[in-house]
Image 1: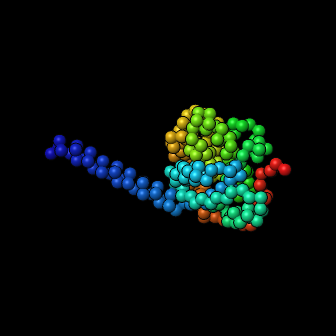
Image 2: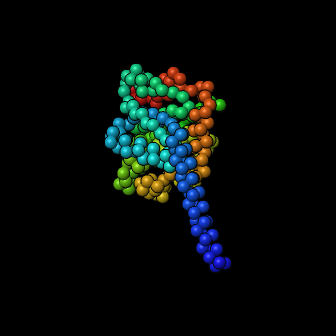
Image 3: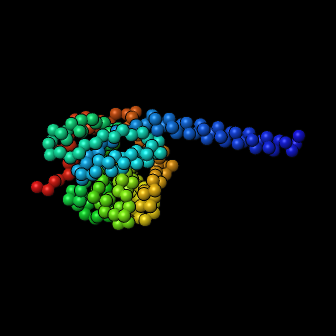
Length: 234
């Protein structure tokens, strides 16, 4: 009898661990189902639609692994201001706006070509919702090692979304929120394993939960794209 208690206890422990794992997976899945953001992508860079769709799918997967479900809306650049306003009709703290810029626009915002994007600050008491991804620079970064553009573009979009959802200076030494992507970050992005850490994922879920539960007093209720539209060459 005494010798049989060991295996019985081990089986009970394994059963308990399995139940805990299943419960954790269920809760995590519920988080991804209940927490949702809409991401509006403005393509000023003329990205191939197939590559853009792939990049967005990869960014969506990265964010889903962090516990966030996303809806995506695309708007290709048009000189018609009315078209731009139609694309930006929706608003609120649960809507993010990502602009994919070619180098002529990116150079006016960040001179260093090693910078692949930037997020815009917001007024105190409001949630940030606007960010740029320097798409042409991402393409050059990919071509240095003949890598595919969509995985890197998707990771770059997720990085900027991370800035909007993570409070304060979200840069880290390594990982998807690294300020400067090196060979490891590039390799991980191409392999699809450049993701948010557990702590970052928790912070993202907390931020989105707050956005969904409280109103943003200065939300983009009547959003006007022309207010923050990058300067175009005349």
